[in-house]
Amino acid sequence: MDSRISPWISEPVRRKAFLEQYWYYAVELAQGLMTPGQRFPNVALTRDLLSRVDLAGTRCLDIGTMEGLVPVLLKRRGADDVVAVDGLDFSDKIACVKAAYGVDFAYLPNVMSGSMLRALDERFAGETTRYRYAGGIRPQRSFDVVVCSGVLYHVFSPFHVLATARSALRNGGLLIIETAALPLDAYMMQYNFAGTGYVLGPSDTWFPTVPLLDHFLRFLKLIPLDACWLPAGDHLIRFACIARAAGHRPTLPQETLMEQATWNLEYDTLLRSDFALDGGTAPVAYATADAKPVYRPGLGTCDLHATMRARKPLEPTTDMVELHLDQTT
Image 1 (tube, rainbow, N blue to C red):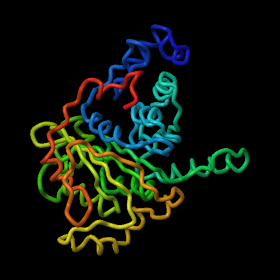
Image 2 (image 1 turned 60 degrees about the horizontal axis):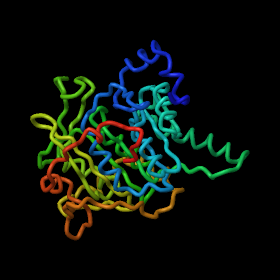
Image 3 (image 1 turned 90 degrees about the vertical axis):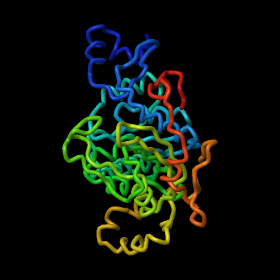
Image 4 (image 1 turned 90 degrees about the horizontal axis):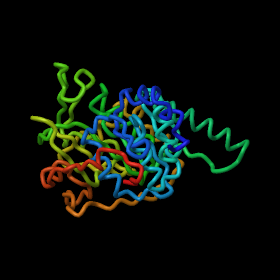
């Protein structure tokens, strides 16, 4: 057995207790030893988009990391620096996964969406102090790639979380969003008022439509590039998209209020234009799928709803919903 992970699984009683904890992801910790995991198919959407991003040398943020599946893939694909945040504290499981996969990344537990930028600021301040005294690589506050998978429909204000994710992303960087959504051609969100949900019940909150998500992204100076989806019950889908941070808001002619809405006093407190100024503007490379997305003529953005309608749903394989020791995507 690999000595790096032996503190957690070498002794039978401790191994049994360790594996009987709640595990969100199914992760191979040693040859033939898998955590129970939930094997939710939505992670396949995130991995599909992430597999086409050139991660070499990038600085990445994973929001809602759980046991760190996404950071492992980011590091194995060549990311230089990865920060993973979560509202829960899975420190023991994160340490075990890091050891099993031979990767290292920063883990910030117990971070709620409203305090995320403050937590990232505090880490940046600590890294800056260390750099002044010890040298090495100059720290950056901004990120090249931000992943927010399976989070938006668990928070009370999805737009605020999107704005936080965008604030941490430098212009030219890429944001991957995955969430439960409504496939309706309308600008609306459905609130899970009955608490019945379809995954975890009362922790499910808002289900946005795909057009509204598209609008939110462009309102936050993000250019939608691509999307994928799969069915999720009677009236919902799981939907993932990737968008590039820009210096402007791509606006449709009928969206007459988009620019005026930025006059709202709250807008500049949500979209922190001062946060991610240190990472340059060079675009992070992304290769679209063979089935090309539907683009809006003259606007240069992917029409997320039209792309969803044109694309067949993704069919996840077992390898796409589990993390194995030999995987890089």
